[in-house]
Amino acid sequence: MAPRTDPVELAGHLRMSVARLARLLRQQDESGLSPTLTAALATIAREGPMTLGELATRERVAPPSITKVVGKLEDRGLVERRLDDRDRRVTRVEVSVAGRAQLEASRTRRAAWLAARLLELPEADLEQLAQALVIIDALADADAEAPVVDGSEAAR
Image 1 (cartoon, rainbow, N blue to C red):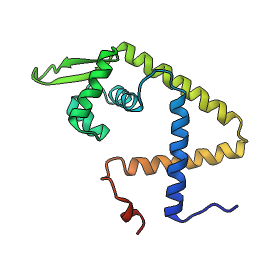
Image 2 (image 1 turned 90 degrees about the horizontal axis):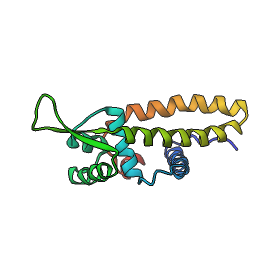
Image 3 (image 1 turned 180 degrees about the horizontal axis):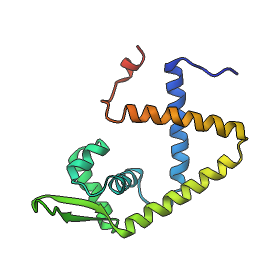
């Protein structure tokens, strides 16, 4: 069967494939954290200490929602709040040692699961996947800060 090249059909297929793979990877996470908590923890770890407002912007959620998320992470000992060294009125949230350990354990488990699936593929499929990842990364990088588009605009 020839691959579909219609952008709208391809977008739907790609979205479903990425969502299915993401769900399977989430199932490998035994941390007990929700996807929202895991995403926020990973963002804090990747971006470094940040204010709640900065985190809300990066996660694209409302400030009251991120306050609850950080509270849950803090209750579990995965993040800590620290006063900013330059402006003592500002509080920054950072990943704790326990939070880093949890992220690393989860990443290791999910990477091992995915690597085992990849080992089942023929070399030619692995080469195609490597090429496709370059394109997928470019799509993600180009649109990381773009506004949300409603479905009617994508169909034009």
